[in-house]
Amino acid sequence: MDMTWISVVLIGSLFLLLAMGVWVAPALLAVGLVAMHFFADAPAGSILATTSWASSASWTMTALPLFIWMGEILFRTKLSDDMFAGLAPWVEKLPGRLLHVNVFGCGIFAAVSGSSAATAATIGRISLPELRSRGYPEAISIGSLAGSGTLGLLIPPSIIMIVYGVAAQVSVARLFIAGVLPGLLLMTLFSGYVMIWSLLNKQQIPAAGLAMRFAAKVYATRRLIPVVLLILGVIGSIYAGYATATEAAAIGVVGALLIAGFSGMLNRTTMLASLLGAVRTSTMIFFILLGAAYLTSAMSFTGLPAALASWIAGERLPAWALLTALTVFFIVLGCFLDGISIVLLTTSVILPAVQAAGIDLLWFGIYVVVVVEMAQITPPVGFNLFVVQNLTGKDIFTVARASFPFFLLMVVATVAITVFPEIVMSLPRAMTAR
Image (cartoon, rainbow, N blue to C red):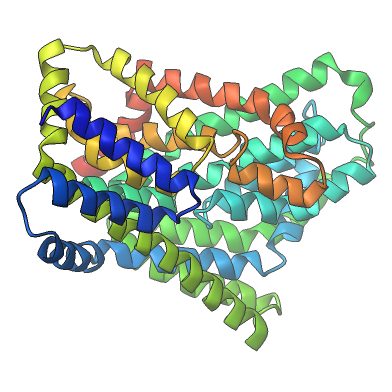
């Protein structure tokens, strides 16, 4: 059968199931079964059994529940209070003042969380009430939180990077290191926009509070020491070559338990809540991963990915044209699906085409994460929009409008890493050369 018809049937079946409200994982499995039964000459049941085992029996994937648990533990501590108290004295002199706490606080928590929703929720639950009580404009407060919360996907350790690394067979440790500079780039763009907006709207920014002496600022910063040590323990151990991603995840869990214990927040209730939260999230991701792995196998039996890769190679499409089309495609998918589902849903078909276009899969992983970050603040299914909506009580389109400038800044970051790929590749190369 013509590959065009096969792709229309399979893609149509998938979107029909998703539109009917079927969960992502069963939808992927169902489309895989359709592909195997009608378009491939292979035993669907046997392939499902072997694929299920292969997709779950991965040592790399053991880092996933550990990093999720680390974030769940820290989510239930006083870390957001400590970050606000530790960061606020240092941003008083910057245009925009305390608005920068959203950006820097999300950047720091992202380095110990791996989840954009958890990052936005943790920082927002203390920063938004503080900013509101001090008279900061609501739109820029909401927008900076929703936009900066997406850093949870990019700044390592990132759950979505682990998922992509397993699906694309790319080193998770190298992905983590590759995300550092793009993450700092986005933080700089966000903070720069806040400064420019504040300089253009000086009358809307409240007056500075009482000036603190340098010694007092340093003393306030002591509350950031535990999380900084945790970041150094997790990321530093990977970069120095002392630990794999899984071992670094174990270090992160121990560090998170120590922080929770010393803060007095570690008790039976929070321990059980963090464990159950980690189990729920991990199970959901593993189930989606199983469905995506089966769909990937089914696709390979139909020959669709190979045909698409051959077409890309034959047409000699330049990399920028393919990336432009994929960016639009991912943003549209982001209007309906969460980031992990997008990655697992598209990997089987897209990666052969990406390789045919000569694009490095490590670089492409960071590109995908940045584009999926955009999807976190696109209505109607932007996860960060829901989180901020719950924190503020505003409707989702009000939150989306406030977040739109930060969406555009992510577009700028995507262009920057495409034009200057060394932003992504320099640290992994330095790590390999060591």
